Image 1 (cartoon, rainbow, N blue to C red):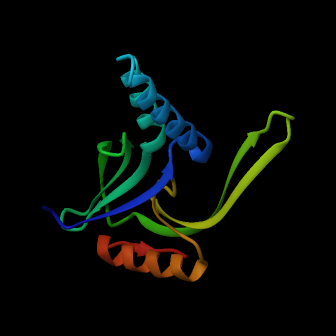
Image 2: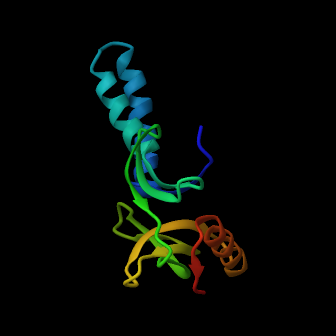
Image 3: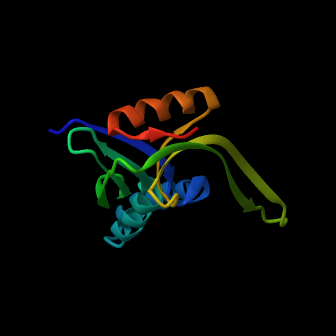
Length: 155
């Protein structure tokens, strides 16, 4: 196997979709005890619960791939060649998941983190390379990834 770094990111449907997926899977197992249509519920639940995004960094060939991992195991994405003109940068990020209760009250789940991003030569963001919880860890990761990929890091 090649020398690769795999960084896992967010669930595709967020925490509410993931929880709904677990409920669908458990319902599918229950329905499966008396009908084969439970397989349908189980598969939908597995898709909701386990689908996430990640990035694969190939150290030897200097390529990166942003992937969607369906069912948690089927990895789909396209390889991007890393050029010496590309840069690695750290930017703050806030992810907000909002759900509404039956009484129409908003429940928000905020996540503050820092993303290590890959930019092309025209300063267009190509993809995130890693998430870190603190700025210090993000700067260290950006320096480490820029050395691994042979790039300049602009912090």
